[in-house]
Every structure is written in C-alpha cells, then in structure tokens.
Image 1: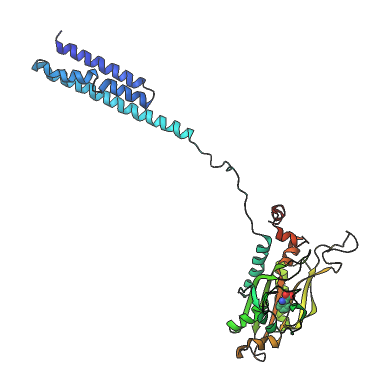
Image 2: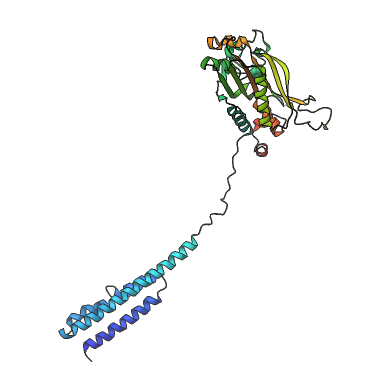
Length: 354
Ligand code: PHE
C-alpha cells in the first residue's frame, strides 16, 4: 500500500470522525471546541495537508484534492450545525425572556382625578362658553376702588368691615367677590361684552357652609337693549344644563349695590327634596327647602358710569351681571353638605367624588 493510499484513508477517517463530532455537538460552545479540535492549528487534518508536499509528485494531486475536499465538507457541516444550534439557542433565550404585557404593573400607581372644585369650575365655564361667553381671569389682591367703590358700595357699607374682609392695607383687600372684574373688563374691552370670570375670593367666615377662601364665577353681559329676561333666560339655561333639568329653580328679589333690580337664584335643596325625616329641620337649607346658588341683576347705571367710558354710557348700553359660588354648585351636585370637606383633601373623601 502506498503512502498516498494510507493518507487518503486517514483523511477519510478524519472527515468521518469530524462530521460525527459536529453532529454530536449540542451547543454552539461545544461546536466551537469541535472546530478547534478538527481544523485548528494543532489539528491533524491541516497538518496532513502540509505533509502533501512531501509525497511523490504523482501522488500529490489526488492527496491534496482529497484533503481539501474533506476540509470543505467539514467546514460545511460546521456551518450548518452552527446555524441550527444558534437558532435553537435563540429560541430558548427568547422563550425565557418572554414578557407578558398583559400582567398588571407592580406596584400599581393610583390614578389621579380632578378635584370636584376644578371639574365644577370647568363645567360652569363650558356652559357659558357654549352660550357665546369668553373667559377672563382677574387678580385676587384688589383695590377697594374696584372691590367696593366702583361697584356702588356706600362708604359705610357693612361688607367693608374689617370683620368681614381681609385687608392688606387701607385701600387694598383680598377680593371678597369676582365682581371687581366687571369694571376692569369694561375698562379694557368695548361692548358688546359677554364674559365669565372664574376665580378665588376671600371672606372672614368659617363654618359648614362658609369658607374663608372659596371660588366664584362672575358673569357680565353688556349690549344694546339687554333686559332682565335675557338674564333669566341665560341663567335658567345654565341651571338646566348643570343640574340636568331635574332640580327646581326660582328667582327671588334681592339687593346688591351694583345691580338694580337684583335677584337671587335658588335651587331646590338636594338634602330634603323628598321631605326631611332627620329631625326638626334640614341642616343644609335650614328648613327653607331652597338653596341660594347665585346673585344677579341688571348692571346698575352707577357701575356703568364708574367705568368712565362713553361706550358704556348707561343710555347707550345695558347689561346683566351674576356671581355664583362654585363650592355651592359642587355641593348641590355631590350632595355633600359640609364645605370644609372640600378643602381638607382627605383622599378617602376625594375618592368618592371622582
Ligand atoms: N358679588 C355678589 C356676591 O358675591 C354676587 C353678584 C354678582 C350679584 C354679580 C350680582 C351681580 O354675593
């Protein structure tokens, strides 16, 4: 037997052994070890190839070719095995990393919600925007001129008392209502004027139905030929929209220094609509069966004069104005009679008013 024949047999043996090892490898890491063992620098097959040059010239061709074919076959087997092992490994890894996106997060964060004062404020604003009014905002620190004088309060009007009003200085107060914005709006904008002005107001009061700081929405409409029926129609539309047309509403004559004539609008007391059974009299309306939600009236000519603009001369334009308490409206909608609860921010309370 020639050396070449022995060599060819050995090449075949090495190829068979190598392909068996390749097939037996179960991981890409094992396969890499196989590759180094069969084709690496110290492996037998590459070294046999180097030995081909020492064969007699006539045998070199066949031997070299056989060794190269073997090498090619092993490389091909390695590549195929590698790609099938790699994709199996990838699949295992993906399965282990699998994320169930439908599982609830942990810890679960509580959802926030608008405070009932904020949502009521927005709802009231929305109703008037729907009726064609624009929204303005005003200042909470106000001069006595805008808060009282320009609104036709006499110099001795009781609302000016330091027991009722927070004074910052002799002629600066925390506004006691949003009405000072009536005159400011007329100073700034020409008629026709249809505006609502929501905001915070301050009074020295604190009990179940009064807070030292609360919220009002002022309304002002000034145009040619505005009458009390425009006021009535507008506020009835508002009340129906906010209370869903279920609660009874009434207009009652009243007095405000800055409107003439003046009215108060009441809605039926939510707490004793079906008769009060809790004792002497319902604590919410004090037995009146009605709750006042807003004051209103025709703008007093003296207020139009205080603006000091020809465009607002009382013989040219007329207007109506109204002011409502947001807390009152929230209270009526939620049925919770103690206003202090709205300010304490006890989450257990707020949760119920979502
Ligand atoms: N400013 C009045 C109050 O706070 C409400 C009001 C506004 C009345 C506008 C008439 C017109 O009670």
